[in-house]
Image 1 (cartoon, rainbow, N blue to C red):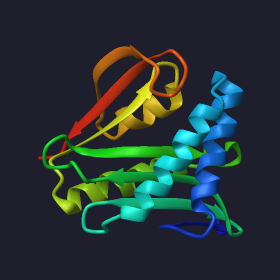
Image 2 (tube, rainbow, N blue to C red; image 1 turned 90 degrees about the vertical axis):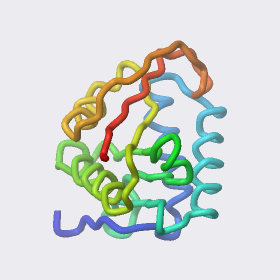
Image 3 (cartoon, rainbow, N blue to C red; image 1 turned 45 degrees about the horizontal axis):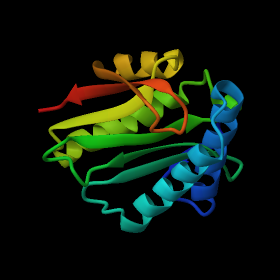
Image 4 (cartoon, one colour; image 1 turned 60 degrees about the vertical axis):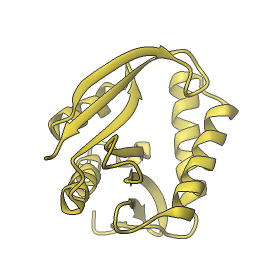
Length: 163
């Protein structure tokens, strides 16, 4: 793991975040163009308005290639909670503890910023990610049928109170 680094934004991170999401969710869940476009536009828009006092973005790279990321969008932290977004790792990095490290970075950042809570949206069936969320104290707060990712899924909102 000596050649693996965790950093903030690096050139190519937007494209790689979109690619990682598109490849995984297409292969495993049949998501398509709508989903990939949503991820690319969302990450790009977020990074263009990133305020380091409330927002965070972390990448995992090996040999200069982005192979994972996570973000904290704190724009609505005081009213709705900070939003954990775009959490993903390439298949080759799974099982090395890097997902755990990314979540530690994200939740620790929220605590340091004084965000009262943090939440995320996911969907039923992503059991490995759910295990990590619950390990970090997130609890299932809401479930509903939805199409927010362009495909019918049982959406799940997980939340973690920090204050």
